[in-house]
Image (cartoon, rainbow, N blue to C red):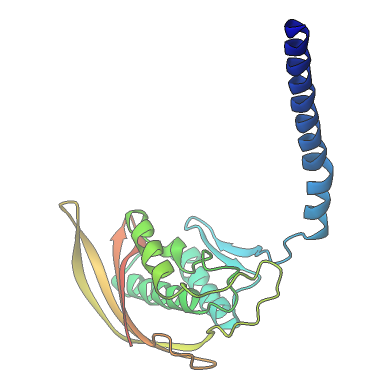
Length: 217
């Protein structure tokens, strides 16, 4: 009798496990997919233009101001005949302005993790910059995956270069030619975000990379 009861218990457990697995598979393949279909993410950025050889991109959600500076930089980079000091300084100015516009035009960002300006950073500086921005500028940005956000967020409407100086920058015992650029900018609506900042960028193999950014309110 005890053996029969033992087998009945084991058989019942096996049936229960099978039912749980079947139930999970049914939910995962039918109900969950149905939920995802009913609520697809509607706010998705699409690349509409790019600068060959530099991996700089323009998205359909970027502001008109950003688009204007992007086109200027694209013309400068793709139609260059020779690299001169004047040409490199123009490159630095456009890159700095695009960085600030993209970073502080937050209204078009999908979430706080959708940080602007990362494509212009030196690779080794990206992680620390991302962490800093998540804890400061983007900390309170609400999710807008379904275009339902009502939060007021900044849009940069104008920007100007205050100064540009040539300098050097040391990375792991390697000294790079660098530029220090100070900028100021205004917003469509003043929400208390930074309006002055300093960018440092290095020149490496005829390409510029931002290595640091310090805002000043």
